[in-house]
Length: 377
Figure 1 (spheres, one colour):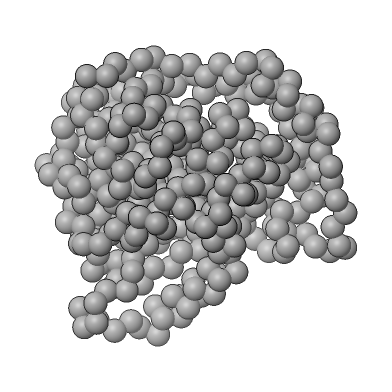
Figure 2 (cartoon, rainbow, N blue to C red; figure 1 turned 180 degrees about the vertical axis):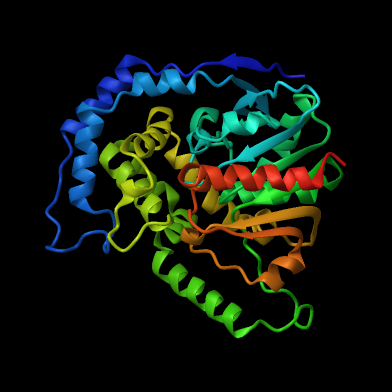
């Protein structure tokens, strides 16, 4: 069996020096008056964020905080896998693996790992191709393959039966785990669900309210799909610029933290996230050089077909769904209940796509309640 090795984040000084040089040399353009966030990332906000990044942000302090979490690496399916493994003080506690998505990282869970650790043995991997797992070195890394890697990781850590949680791509990885090894999953908890329309006649007709929500979601999807189309068709072209320019990388990622979050019409992104939280997530991509392989997940999934991500058969494992209003995903409940064995459905009062970072209290309570109800059966 491949060894599990302790790991600490230690970014070389020359990487930080190079970052500072690139930030100093950013070639800005002048947006049209009043462009704001409507045309993408607000340039005035981005300039201030990059100024803060260059002169006030302290990566070494953040690095030290992240290194308080027990971290490890191992190799699975020819790919390095980095993960946090925070054991509960109760040796008989249930294990829980939690998965991030794009454009997130393990830093999404910085506020929730210790509280969850009071109830679970927490395993938090960097997805293959993301962050400290490093770039992928071969094609084929879809959510299906990532799920197989997470299942192997849990076996390697000695967990035969456990719970799993995820949002964004992490929800798809979690779903694939439930499809591949239902006997090993006590239950799954998702804060995003993609539920295709079931076969005709298999579920009740949607209510007017459900149809309106579905229509609203589709309208939003049309407006927001640009990044996804690019990453699913020509990720390499895009990634050249993102891997070369820290300002460009921040613009690409930070926009999603605004658009997918529970932020009011004034577009005050810092009502939900601090500059340090935004930049720490961006830094994980920058210092590891993983934006290209992270973006490639969209391409791999497109060519892999629907069964590589969304379910192509019904998920039998008990499933909890927490819908956070800022996320912008409005799945039709009858469709969700066709594909998933829904045992808990929570409409959250606030929060968005990055739920564990934006609304950690709600996220923690719902995860703990879910697996408390399911028990360790």
